[in-house]
Every structure is written in structure tokens, then in C-alpha cells.
Length: 164
Image (cartoon, rainbow, N blue to C red; front, top):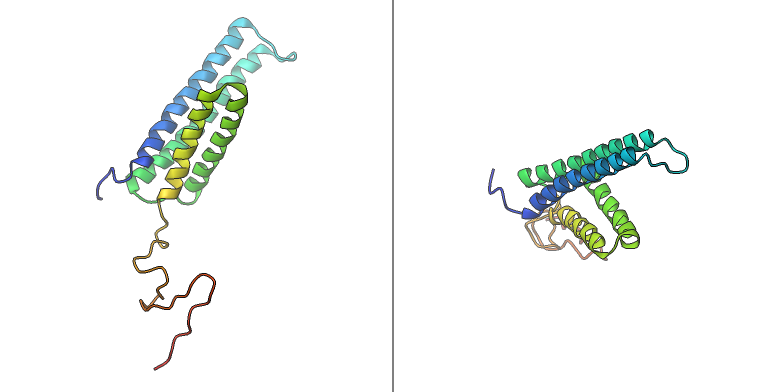
């Protein structure tokens, strides 16, 4: 299978997403408990509904991060780029972290913003460091499929093959 720690970015992303999932679940659980204990209400909403929805929302969001962490873990174990649904999940996690970072800047402060941007950068780095299998050729960039020179530049068409 080859060396397991070839590109540590995927391992780091997986660990960060798992820890973040635990943090999201814990934070929402604490917020739901506080709302329940204090019988808080927002615009006349039932405190029990607010408490339950906070806890359920935390679990759903935590499961989302765990699923994204599993995708990153599979990328690390297989040493292949994410494909299909896994790639979509990681891209959506990057978008979520960008949006959370924007909200963190305005509502919480710089340390939370920096954390969100670091996680965003790690996810984007994971997505960008793994090349597609067919895109990484072993020959020169302007080589034709038969190995001869003459693939042309991106602006000019390749030369027509000559018949013997």
C-alpha cells in the first residue's frame, strides 16, 4: 500500500474536522441546556423547542463534519484525491468555513476568524494537492500522446500527424 504518511495534509484535515465536530456538538448541547435551565424564550418561542432544536442541530452539524472528516481520512488512507460525493462534501465544508469565518469576523472576533480561515485553507490545500490520476502526465507538457514533440501550446492547435 505504500507509505501511509505521504501527504500529511489529509490526516491533519481529518483530525481537525473530527475535533471540530466534537466542539460543535458540545457547544450546541451546552447552549441548549442553558436555554432549558433558564427557560429563555426568543420572540415567544417555546424554550423546550429551542433547547431541543439546538441539540438536534448540533448533532446534525457534527455528523456533517464527521462525514467530511471520514472523507479526508479516506483520502489519507488511499492516497488518492476525493471523487464524487466526497469531493462535493469537502468543497461544501470549505464554503461553510468561509461563511462561518465571515460571521466570526463580525460577531466574535479575530481569533475565531483566524481559526475558520486556517481550517478553510487546510481543506482547500487538501483539495488542491491531490492531482487527478489522468492529469499528471509523465512526459513534457507539450508532448503528443505518441511521445513525440508537437502537442502545441494552449493557444495554437497541435500539428497534424504526418503519414509515411
